[in-house]
Length: 124
Image: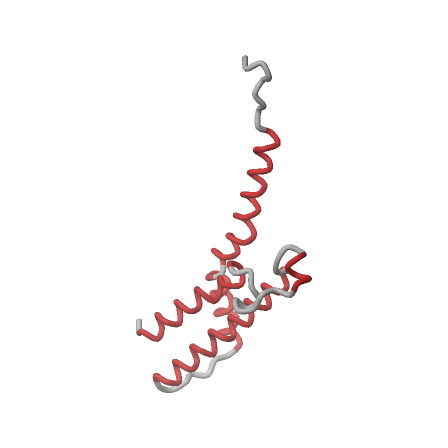
């Protein structure tokens, strides 16, 4: 694989996970005060960031392809497949954001509620 291909895959894997890992708006701006008080970024904002990252990475890849030579025209199937690949690249960030954080919170609250209490006299 060429250096441009490796660079594009690296940028795509970072950009696909960034909306789920980072709590800021587009990884640059702090959240508006109302959203920050509600508990972080809403789901629709993460999806919007993910879509914008997809188009940004696609633009970078197209520019690298134009720099390397002739740009090949693509049809709709190409964009569907690349969007699916971008979704697969986002899977680790999605797992971290929605499954691991919640399971840790649930585990710690569940363990603290059901932990056995020591008897008051010290004898089991």
